[in-house]
Amino acid sequence: MYFDWTYVVLVLPAVIFALIASARVQSTFKKYSSQTVPGLTAADVARRILDDNGLSHIRIVRISGNLTDHYDPKADVIRLSDSVYSSSSTAAIGVAAHEVGHAIQHAEGYLPIRIRSAIIPATNIGSRLAIPLIFIGCLFAYLGEFFVILAYAGVACFGLSTLFQLVTLPTEFNASRRALNTIESDGILSGDQLVGARRVLSAAAMTYVAALAVSLTQLLRLLIIVGSNSKSNRR
Image 1 (tube, rainbow, N blue to C red):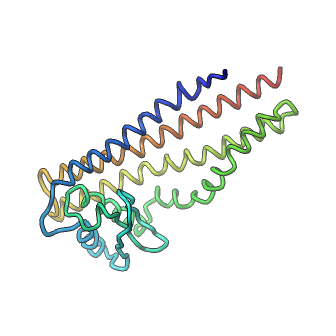
Image 2 (image 1 turned 90 degrees about the vertical axis):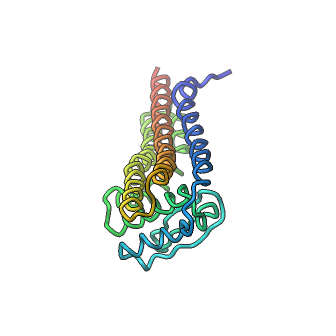
């Protein structure tokens, strides 16, 4: 039986970290969903911050799901999930303000988000080509150097996904920082309410750290597999 030590030693710990981070987001959001700001919804806060930043053209719509919130720059719309849109909790307000942070990033031409947007097409293509190229390259590596190069090209394609995760990290942290600074300076939240929003956004940020960790360890694993395969076929 084949034992893939590279997955167990490298990738599995990162996957476990990602699962823990995801569970922490859910539990933290649930905890601070009971901490409310009467008379103010997450959608209200999002609208207020957008208007204050000259982004009144950006719409806010409700979508189904739990924590499926996102900003769509192509459609100029912020989509807030059922658990966020009409909620008056500090957790929901923090999430909504975070998505507005992304809208402001796009409006200001924030460099990391410009880079992320620019590499999305290449990342999508690379994610589809990576495994087939690696598989074909490793399978026929004994036929010559061309297939070894092909396998490494597949690794490079996968590396685009890792680059995307890397650029995503400062983008998400910056959006959260903008959100917290705004809801504090505008007097939307204060004291324990601000603490609640900060903890929700901090927990969410860790999911992006975990995603990068999984991608990095997968990249290293693929490099080891391709390197070992090419050496064995040269013997």
